[in-house]
Image (cartoon, rainbow, N blue to C red; front, side, top):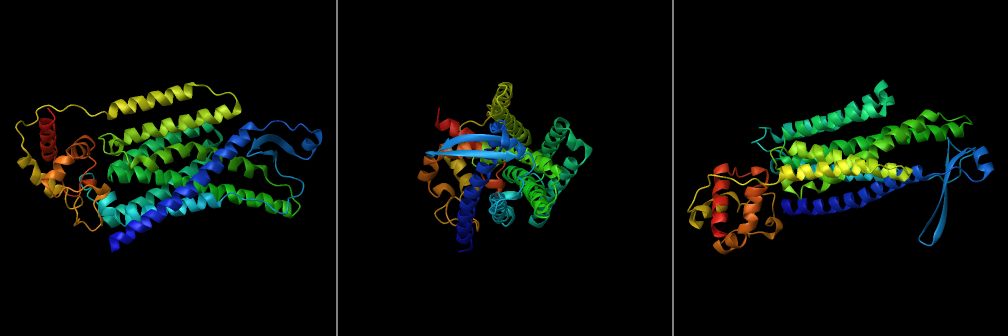
Length: 394
């Protein structure tokens, strides 16, 4: 019953996270697009009112006229819409999933004792430190003199994300490392909204309420953090889907693959931001494409020499039954799985033979199974499965 309840909460939490994430990313991308498409006001009186740019658009059969003020209008309207809850609910639902799947289920999804011999409590404590520390270091850098030089700041941040990727893969399972990398970036993004963007906007609104001129620096800082958020978005989205692709996080150089996808995602986003401004160089896309091609080539499985010959099914069956059927069974014995994952059951000879290709792919090619190597399948046993699979497909 406990496993069923966790699974049900997982479904609901993931659904909410998906919906709110779409809302946050959508509004973020739209406002970046809007900012970069603004034109000079066509009506002379608008400039005197403080309008810095405007945009006409058509959507859904209606015409829209958007205007952005250099600082703020002379008087604020009665209704002012704030964009914050999309970010907050995305982070809250994401943290709920992180705690439910990776912290509550640390023994299954986070801790891999072949990587680091951590207890679940220690692993979770380190994860919390990474989440908090990532934001603190990032915020200090943005507020430092380095924060006034975007190019230099971007280089330092990229180097730190590479160190983050490496450090996480030295502590956690590949899947756990990837999701926590995304959680650190996601926490920075929502902290930008909560600690910088929204407070700055509130100070501007309050200043107008007192009849004072708002501090333009609040708008400048908010714009900087918003731009950073848009560059973090594609790497975070990649991480959110990476658990479906064990070929990435199970690789011996999984941290380098993560860095490659992060850099490629940022470059792709840089291209589109520049394209909004009308001066996009295709070089960003070309470099991103080359990085992804290099990552793909690096991830490609290598042929193995020296495999055993004459491996029979009788030699492989005990390995499958011992290492796989605690989860992949009509009646799983592992507490975390109320039903066989993906509906794959390996109780009988017929089932094992029918899933031979999947067994080979997951245990040998991707090394995704057993998950976090819970049953401690050895390299020799993986080699035995590979030799058997190749023998029945000659």
